[in-house]
Length: 506
Image (cartoon, rainbow, N blue to C red; front, side, top):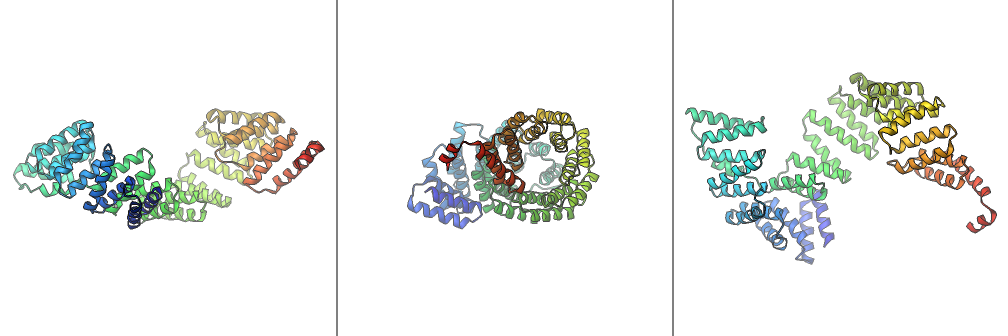
């Protein structure tokens, strides 16, 4: 039945709740005791308000896996919604028997007693909860309402004051405090807070949100995504759930779904929030190598905030990827005008000059970077590499790379640059050793490094290794110059190999 479970979860991750439910039910038709499917159905039914059907599945899971706290919590809330308060209390009490300081179980048990109008019992649990977890804000709000119902105004005022220390912008609590002061002055009748207290009780969505956040923090992506989708089933306008659904789909490389989710978020966001969402969408397009779409998103962001230097920098990245280097220079220079002390902007300016083979300007930019940040390893690497390519002061080039490698000793690109400098100096064996090491430490295979390694192997007469290096370079990127080198070393290798060995290989 794992196939049914996986397919049901995929449907759920896409927000296709009916398809997820039907798939899980089909799975149970084949195996009525498949607990994971009962768990999934219990959660879906409970989140959609079908508590009677949820109860059947959740009870099945609880019987099969009696140590699962999350199922006990969901069962408790399910019973609460069905007004079976005695039944709701039991699974929570079982959790607290094993762990008396479990904050979620304590809070929900207090809420059960609220529903039963056993306010003193609820007060007891909430007071203990606040003592154990002083920043559990929901406990303050609930306890404050209980005090208001019982007309314990001083206690309510004290609790709400503590609440505002943690959430100073909560308008609802500020209004409660103002009302309490009016009641104490005798200028306002005490309204009935009982209905408000019951209606403010957290539901399945609240619990799914809490558990989803815990799973997210533990990097359990698929399980967290399931919880956030269940939150949205019950609360379609829950912005926090939408944010995590978008983020998790992105982390799981489901980019099409992630883009759809982020675009929905952008559609609802305030103008100042839209900018960050557009930038996020642009970064996904960059990963997908959809550069035109990336450019469109950054243009939308710039239309809202035309004075954001980071947006001009990102537009520079777009133009570099499109090999529009002059356009890139213009927007990067605009970014620097808006934020002149950014070493990263100046570095990218220098890197763009290097693309245009304007090496003097590139060196000038990199040296400016080092004035701002002497430990900017990428700038040190660029300077060393440019010096090597231009046959400038190779001793100085080595000094730059040694400093870069002190900062990041296993950076494959820095090792490549240092190896290439030694190649230029004629220290070929040393170059081979560094370039071999570079191929191991680069984060993604780089055709240039294999090209350099092929050159080094070729000049020391290791033609078979040179053939392998050039072949690897061409796998990564076709290049006519490298292709000619490969053909040349193949001929040299054939001359090097004894005739009898060549015959055996053929």
